[in-house]
Image 1 (cartoon, helix red, strand yellow):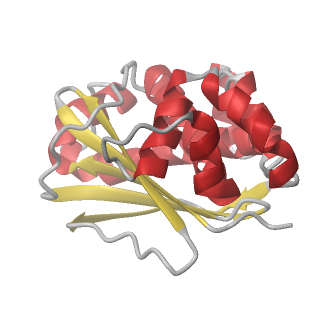
Image 2: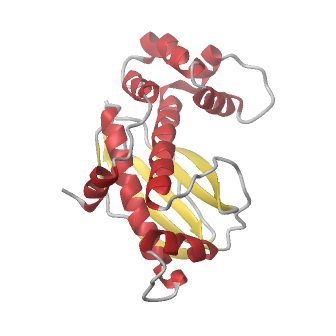
Length: 231
């Protein structure tokens, strides 16, 4: 059993909502056949509906119903929405359990100063990568919350290790959620580096969504990049 699986079992991080799991299974079928049921599930969840409308209208102030939005963005971007919900669930639960923090899903300025960037690749039925971006100045509150106050060195020196461990737990939870949704995959070991600036490296045919959070008044970011799902 991996470290992530052990921690997930120990802290009993909850399963994702059933409606998201249903969507995950539906997007793997024939889209023309399943579009109506997909739209029905989207309509029942304000968070998912808002994300679908935002993608379909490209963030512009345009009136559009859910059925039209689902058809416009198609199966691959619906898959992106599903995986975003699964990832947000994994991250929120991990931060609440491991750091005793409630993340607020709202945009807050991250000026792209020095930050620790962690990345996990996943491959299989679902293929892509997840980035977790934490400003270096978050070390003062994030490291003691994760490791305790009796630290062997300065929090800033330990932040990359903490981000790697948090991302490892997030990845294990995310993988479990994907499997529950019928999107089996394998995970890479987290790669972590401290850098200024950020580039996703999105390739042709990939889909990218940036997800901002706020914690302790600071902007934290997730980036999800996926390739079209395999047959």
